[in-house]
Each structure stands twice: as C-alpha cells, then as structure tokens.
View 1: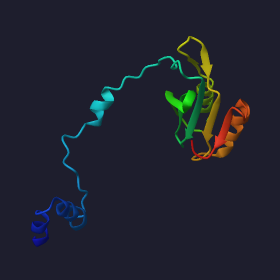
View 2: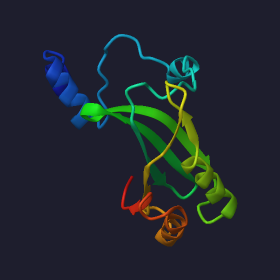
View 3: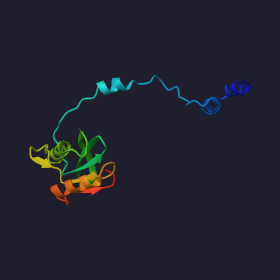
View 4: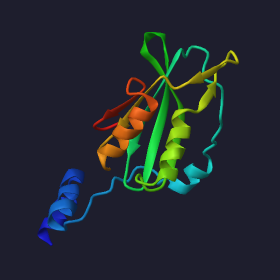
Length: 153
C-alpha cells in the first residue's frame, strides 16, 4: 500500500509501479484509441497507372508457409520509389496451382501513365520459410537474371 501511495506522487513512479510491482503493461492515456476496423473500413483499393516518373519495376516476394506476399516497386530517377502493387497469394508453396498464381503475378503487366505497358524487370524471391528448392526451380523457369532467389525479401 505504501508503494502505491508513493507511486501516486509521480507519474513516472506510477508507471514503474504498474509495470514492475503489479506486473501489468502501462498504457499511456493519449486521447481515445482508434478502432482498427474503422480505419480498415476507410481503405480504398484502386489500380492506377504507374506514375509518369517511374522507369523501372522491381518486386520482392516474401515466402510463408501458407502464402506468398509480393510487393511491386516503381523506380524513378534519384532512387525515388513508388509502391505500385501488393499481391497476396494464399496457398501452400508446394502446390502447383499456388505457384502458377505466383507466375501470373510475376508476369503481370502494368499500365504506365503514358499508356505503355510495363513488366517487372527484376524479382527477389525469398527462399526462407519454405523449401528453397521450390524457389530455385521457379527462378530457373523465369530466368535467374530476372527472378533471383534471396534470403529474406
């Protein structure tokens, strides 16, 4: 009780008391908390043209046991980067149907602001989290200069 009363005298002391003596997590009282679902309900997914400044597309594929996540980046002069697309492909990495959907994502065409079509020039594909041989074989199919197996995407 005395520790509690001492802690009430100082905001930092109260935080220390809650964390160490009570073994609970201190939560800062900063305004009202945002419900994540309210924010998610406001998300608008759109497909726009690749920005005019972009001259080159690359992608990174993160390999998980139940999905692949691919991020497509557009690159402009001065190393300016634009996130052009995010594709999540659900499925087992050892199933051909899943890998065919990854192939389709790698070969997807993007419309540039000037109306021309762009394809992804280079892809780094994570070999971690799954059997790396799957990625090695798929890289050979696409060409190892275009699809590069890497540790971590």
